[in-house]
Length: 132
Image (cartoon, rainbow, N blue to C red; front, side, top):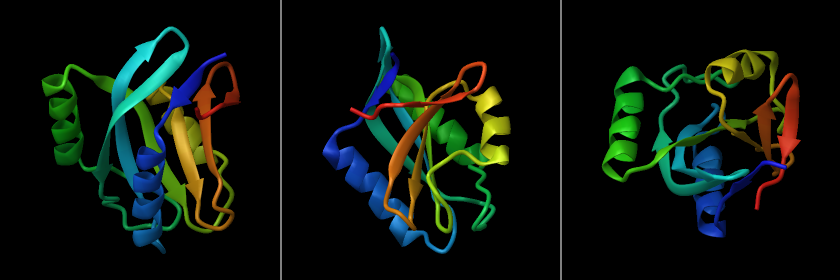
């Protein structure tokens, strides 16, 4: 079974980012490498939510380019997309599911309500995968 590998320090960085960006959704690019069924995060690239919304997030084209350039420089690839849900559970919304089709990597969601950090992958349907 596929999984995403995050250190405690990386988890803390993402959760802190989510808490600091409330009441809006936060977002980040997770860079690393996929080995077998493990998506290994090596770098957390924090981004701003240009929507400044509690229910949506958009990473600006400039920040996306910066993230991809950093990945290239470090010889890494995009291995995950992170965002928070300030007012709901850590499960993908219909909007998330739509965008998961364009970004077939694990999606990590942090719920500011329940403090849950969950990971999902879109197969034929959305499946929860373990965070190790």
